[in-house]
Length: 452
Ligand code: NDP
Image (cartoon, rainbow, N blue to C red; front, side, top):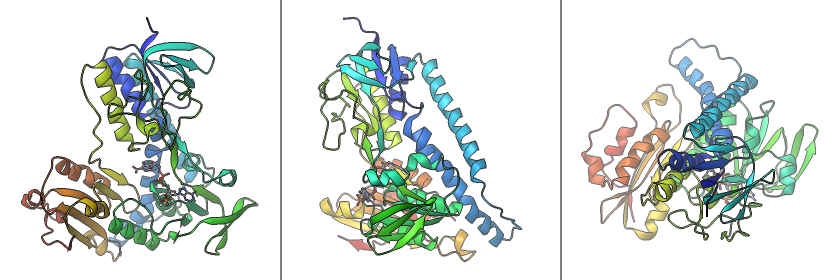
């Protein structure tokens, strides 16, 4: 049977775009891609990229103070949110155009339309047109999840942050994950009074305990009012703000309430189950190691599969799919030892196991140091950095590395290479320190602080 396309991709985010480009340019496939919103997806349009630009913007206030402490004559003015927002959106427009151009250059046909599945070879476009393809790739990402309808009626999500008309003077953030903690630090740096409610005992569940503790303390030191074991029990719109009563008895009015309470896969209304595609408990598409769904002609990559929900992972999954199905190669994406960073202030970079997880299956040695870096100690700032290595006592391999420090995202990329190569503690020790840096501690920690 002749199909209209060799590949039809639903979703123009990081994973879908990579798969479409590689299948077309390297695999010689006839490819189409449908995107209902803006090209680039969550990462480029409403996630990593605008967030990181806000991280940069929010860091300058402290840097100006530091410069003054170092002897510079600095006059610090006010942050102009609207000026920044205009610049931010023109940058996102530019990046979106690059994504479009790259697809077009690779020969991919773009449909600016919602698309769903009609059957294992047929895609239905929003205007009723049907197109057929030998293969279909679902790369529809995820969406913000509010705790309930009521929260949605008065709250905002990370999608709305980049469009705010004014910076909230008093901001409540609900959640203790990546997004909640990153935005707590961003808005604190931009000058908002930030309160954060987290329902559990310590923010950043799932990450290394000591790193979480240090980050929470640093956030509190910067003035973020973190309440753990705390939820909203009552709320009401009052004037331009929201009155909130919390489980700790606290009552306050906030200009905005930001819910960062997780994300869920975009699988609804796509005709997936009707086409025979199996979904998991959280609505994610169930795939095998090659991103193949329960229907052999349909694959899925990225957040919609809820494996490791990170942009570079979606890109790897999309690339591996295109290489395997259209490039004659046999490549399953590798989900082991994926380094990642949380852009709190200070940043947190992690690769491999947390101490808590490592203890479950290994006999371990823990090497850890925490100290005031020279740059900030000089001006009397109290912030500390943390370097931690978790080592397998039997194989000597480094099982996990955790860094809390400015630039930790950059550092963990490099530590990640060594750990991915299987470096042992002795390999770290054989490496000569770069002096004076904070990261030299990675190769100079001689004595374990704990064994287990
Ligand atoms: P997370 O799942 O990381 O965090 C959700 C937070 O909300 C958790 O603290 C959770 O608590 C809490 N929560 C969930 N439901 C409720 C509820 N009903 N009431 C109160 N609190 C609730 O999601 P995020 O939205 O922060 O991030 C989504 C994904 O985006 C991440 O998984 C990550 O993969 C990706 N991301 C990556 C970034 C990076 O790499 N730097 C940056 C931003 C996002 P509990 O812990 O108790 O479950």
